Amino acid sequence: MGFRGEKFAFDSPALAVSALIARLSVSRSNLTIEQVPLCRARGRVLARPIRLDRDSPAFDHSAMDGYALRLADFTRDPPSPTPVTASRDIAPPLRIEVAGESRIGREPPSWPAAPSRPVAIRIVTGAAMPSAADCVVKREDVGEHGDGDALVDAISIAPGVLSRIRAGDNIRRRAENARAGEVALEAGAIVNAAGVGVLAAVGATVVEVAPRVRVSIIATGDELVEPDQSPSAYQVRNSNGPALRAILTALPWLEVTSVAHVRDEGPGLEDALRAAKSAADAIILTGGVSMGHRDPARAAVERLGADIIFHGLPQRPGKPMLGAVAPGGPGEAHGVVPIFALPGNPISAMVTCTRIALPVLASMAGATRPVPAISPRLVTIGNPDGKAIDLWWHRLAALEPDGTVRLLPALGSGDIVAGGRGDGFVEIAPGARPDATTPVPFYEWM
Image 1 (tube, rainbow, N blue to C red):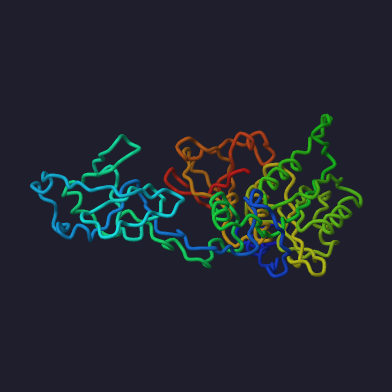
Image 2: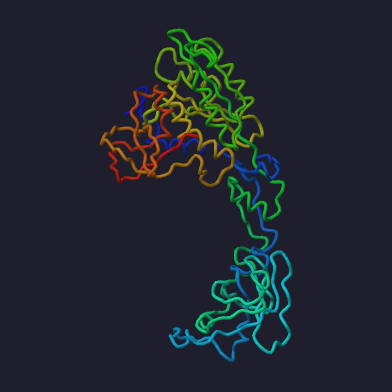
């Protein structure tokens, strides 16, 4: 089984992705660095590791609202290591003077010198622990005495509660998360909302990120007119250009430099490819890649001096897809410019862009970890139909409220309406007939 009378170069979409990435030769040392303010860092790829500027947490603090105690003060009535008995639980509560309050964001009060009786310091979650205290009893485990909620001058603790308290209870210790100087975010990580929080916590108000990968889109076809034009009875509006642009611009580490439309015949395609190669890091071409006598994509790509990595993959839709690499300019970090020649049918173009082009572009961007926005999640199919084909099958699907997906009826890879009614597609292995319990990868539209 193959394409154009030749055996498929790769047995799966995943292997084709890996082969293209292997040809990129991304060198992090050659990547330029862009500095962006913290407010614009979300979604960008870190160019340098982020290290902690101080311990996390930076000081011992309370994990609960309650009262800080020093257990040594209770040696006259030490906590019992045995389970609390009913008689102990009904014993009179111990009354303890409140000697101060530790407030959040402030230095904690000093412990009273040589108190004659046990004392407590009132404390809230996040407030620093007094140096002498070694535990916190939760507020709900004590009785409070004083002039209302604002002023508490004493608390009472049942002996059974006191017997269960241990040193370290309800305390977050300094550096228990990480120590100053440790890497908090690795280079190559894509900054998400939690990452923004880390950057803010370490004071990284200016962030060093990898530059966006610049992508040029070229749509081919004599039959295409622009979306704002009225097509004749035998023309269609160009949906691929806007759809692919929408996929790419949804990712902050990508930048679309141009979207062009060229005719199938004449020098337009080759000229557009050369212009795109000089201005972009990658090229996405749609249409003209199948076996028709008026499909000019492969010849134009080869005249650009590109190496064809594959032409045809064992997948539906998208079987005619072509992947190539053209020589890059001197000193370019990527070494080569990848060219993704996608089929012209709209579902084929969106599927192959999502499944093949995006992970390659993520590698070009310097991402060293899976990118959640473009990575599949495992789902089950709520309406399996038992059908199978001998190719990797990308089937349109809609998300259901229960987390499953519903396969959508579609009349081929030109059925853009069905694509718009769904949320993405599932990938089914050749010959597989997943049932309602079989996990399958689901790729969501951007």
